[in-house]
Length: 431
Image 1 (cartoon, rainbow, N blue to C red):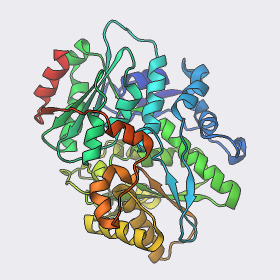
Image 2: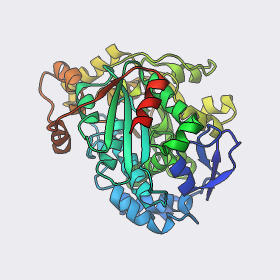
Image 3: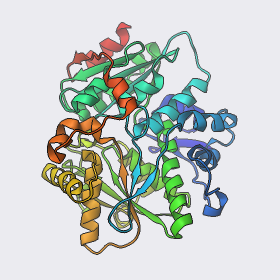
């Protein structure tokens, strides 16, 4: 299969080339030329997550140099589960995506991307720099995936003071070939600086760059696997499609579910749960798409005012009216996040991170409006990463999973950086 840019001015490239480049030469995002259709009965319902991933992704890897290694890549990347757990309320479920090494869903895509990039041929005379802007969880997942991997260095930009203390600790705890830069600005500033670096031809001639943000095809495609796996398991048990409420900031996770549905998987509605950053909610309510300066919220990993993957969504649905008929998006305030965390714990003993709580609140809103069917909220991070928010609300300590505890036990360090591209450019050229 070949891939092209959402902007249509970069020609067609192989999957390997798209993964290596990260961003198309015209500044667009890579998308597949075709979407394969897969019937549910083509899958083994008893298969493991890696086996489901291989079956689902094989058409995207067809004729590519990485195709013979897809099985090994999925096995290497998906070493932890993505369980679909029933909630106390009827027909409601939670898809838990936080059982990886950094306790966030980003581990799936980051580990898959690293497994691919280690297998790609490249010039080894200089290390390949993986440049990452993170609003909380991406940077740690990428750092963990590439830590100690020869021939790669990772440079992580995150907004200083706008991630949780434990997220910040994770971002700076790897050392070695992983550098964390705490930027005195917002996530949008971090993302802008990264995009400027990729558009800087002179810099890229001197410093080989690639991306591991959700714009990367190598992160987007593997995220389809857990949607497919959970939907297939539900279809086998209930013979009905599974609907999803997805917490979203940069739209990568939600778009992976949209692609999986478009490929024929038994997925019903996909509803977007946003925090107080209302760009998507306003668009789906009928306003023009208008990126805004991001605002800081309790669900900080979703503090995005210009979601990059909206460009992919508009490529897939060029008619705005059709797009608005297909999807809904709702904004959730910090007060609503707090009350959802507190009330769900009091009523059912559930403990959700602030991002997952946005999805819980949206599902409760849908149910109150008479929405039926089987639904899953997508739990994007372990609540222990947000102890300073959650523990005062639930009145107890949140147990820290062992992989997260191991990272928090390490020393941590992050370099300060102003929100100026010139500062990032100088830092990249200094090594």
